Image (cartoon, rainbow, N blue to C red; front, side, top):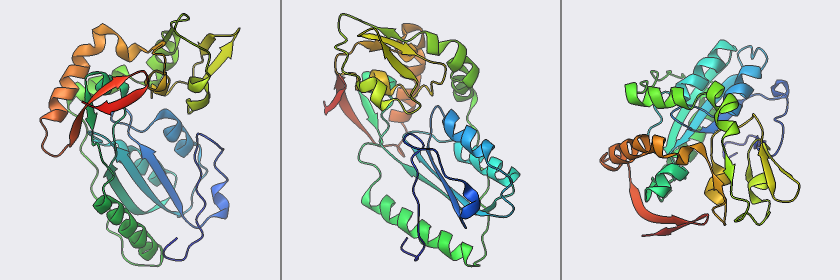
Length: 260
């Protein structure tokens, strides 16, 4: 916009993205879930028609480690025939409920003022590359190490669709049928039936917003299983010891976060 372009923003949670054929530039912005893009973002990019040299850029928001999540989107766009003109990564507060239950909010206070300024400068560079300035494609990001690859596998699409989506648990005595989880689910995967009964479908991203935001702590996701806690402890320990990652000690309770 600062370069004079008309920009249309589309949140996939709220609406279907418009056809790209009418546009001169495509930007894909995505969070990082389990060291990869969310399933719905990957599905959207894969569903695009041949882009025939359409300029495109990617920006990723991550709380701890992004690894090659952005590279995954860039490769699909390249396969579709897009012309890459930018790639940007930025930290954002990590609201993963598993870490919050351990008392850690990673990348708290992000994006910072400096990071937002860098994002604005990135937008200007994209406009310049579209106008003809030479673009040197950055190297691909490094893939995750073995333990994080295992975590990415264990949170993959097949397991999410056929296993985990069946294993969300609702405490009917705590639930007051407020409907907040239904409203906030980014894929509309939760339906409310027969008063307080909630049903999870097969289109779960494992974002765990339903458990995160429940004011009655009535929802228990597979991420809260005791068998998975060693992964949480490992991730928290690794990230908290990484000097490049800020964090705040917090208390998470009944859908709210406060400083410890």
